[in-house]
Length: 182
Image (cartoon, rainbow, N blue to C red; front, side, top):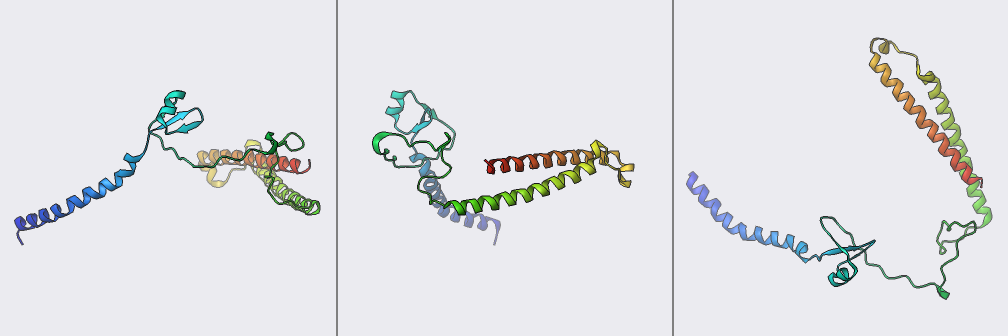
């Protein structure tokens, strides 16, 4: 087959596929044309242009906005807000959560405390090990580090960071234990 015939055959195929490709592109772009302008009114978003003009809202451009349709919550009986939990803090679980009896909750707290105490012992042992190896910023040099001072400096920096991480771990576990003991 000559080059001329090959080009003619390709042009025939292209004439057939071009309208299909154009149609597919139009279908793909249709949702973008269907989207309304989104306006931001403080923390509220709307697509109602007249409402946005009345309230002095700003047009949101160039960002992706995800809109969730929700139903309004029913007002509480008596028109009063729910009372906060004792101690002035909101409760950690919703009112519809199943209640756990006191003995079971004590058992859970005891298990959690035992787990945290075991983690604390591990973290403190790791911290002591790292502090010993760090040796107040002067760790023992290896044979390779005798020849390469840069490797020694890098290992010293890694040990210092490891000590700081281990100290933060111990402090965090102690904080959690303090919360359980309240």
